[in-house]
Image (cartoon, rainbow, N blue to C red):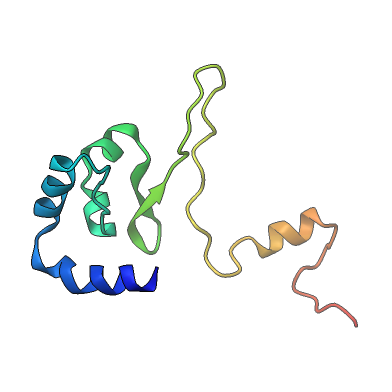
Length: 109
């Protein structure tokens, strides 16, 4: 296997991805492009499916969120999620849910 990787590392740069894909197609070898992250963001299929969504964080600005990869017609989609939390943003809420009346108070022990 390591020999195969060595050969591929040597010959892969000799052609473009499109040239390699054309050769693979001609030889009836299943192959597909492996996209970089920046290429995924502009992928028409991913945009149309709603898998990648641009969101706005209240303090950090725009970011891309990965949605649910599977959608079921019988079951409603999950509600819109909140933005990623800031450090400590929900600490008091979580502490209250766990029964702590004063989340700022350090715990003994």
